[in-house]
Amino acid sequence: MPGRGTVAACAIGTLVIVIRMHGRFVRKWWFWTIIGIATIANTWLLIDFPFAEKNYTFAVIAPIGYIEYLLVAWCIRRTAGSFGDASVRR
Image 1: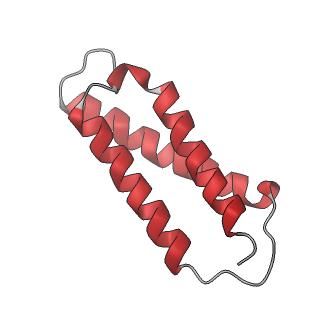
Image 2: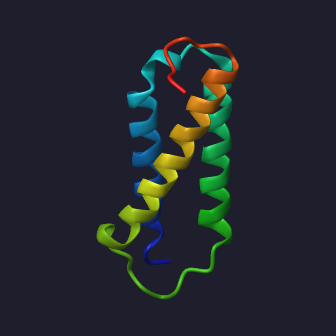
């Protein structure tokens, strides 16, 4: 179905950017739990979301990826703060 490839690429790109920007947490179990939940949510939405017969461009999908980045980054910061990581400012 057209459009799913662009959406999948944007979702993968967003998760790669999150992992690279929060690299200091890669050895924490909770970090990979958050990344796993985001991956499962992306996969579920990609499979179950009824896409129209339309090819979505990156310009259409990118704002959604940015919102996803903000949400996942917020979850990481809140979780790091609650686990007592001193490098996270509140």
